[in-house]
Length: 250
Image (tube, rainbow, N blue to C red; front, side, top):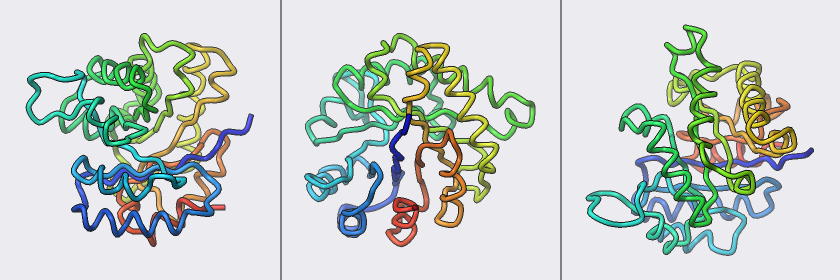
């Protein structure tokens, strides 16, 4: 079963609209003959600007989060209806910064996943352990629980719209990267969990990205692993000269 490589850039809280436009134009030009699947997720304020530039190209428009409710008295939140209106195609949910800095729990993330799927979005569901959890030998169980919660109530026919991103929390923005072997072992384990839930064919088909200090220097070794199907790139997605070599790895 050949899965398509999927390279996504999560810009986090960076880029004004003019900066976002400049970077997006460079990426559209640089990736027009790219062979993989691509996504960029700018901040909410730049979605309309970036969306106009990527429309009709091979780059998908992603959002970094969404509210758990469709609308209502939720000051500061952005709903799936608003994202749909802006042409967003994919939503990143359960990112470690949402889980750890903003204290989003598994039940809330699951609610968001189901709402995003209901409105036809692709979901990139992030899972991953902290350094403390890894050192206690808990990496597999933490990731398994996050997957079980994330997929609770999700029917098999929705799986085509879900991507998993494994992000060891200790490797995000720290310059530390899981070795390709470490990452592949967790990816294989996550695939087993999906197999238990939905069957071997579903496990074989699901795309699992790696996130955590992916750089032009390490992307080829990571992508060479059997269970790693792409990357969710943070810091290196903010400059075209770093993101393009990652996105176009051969």
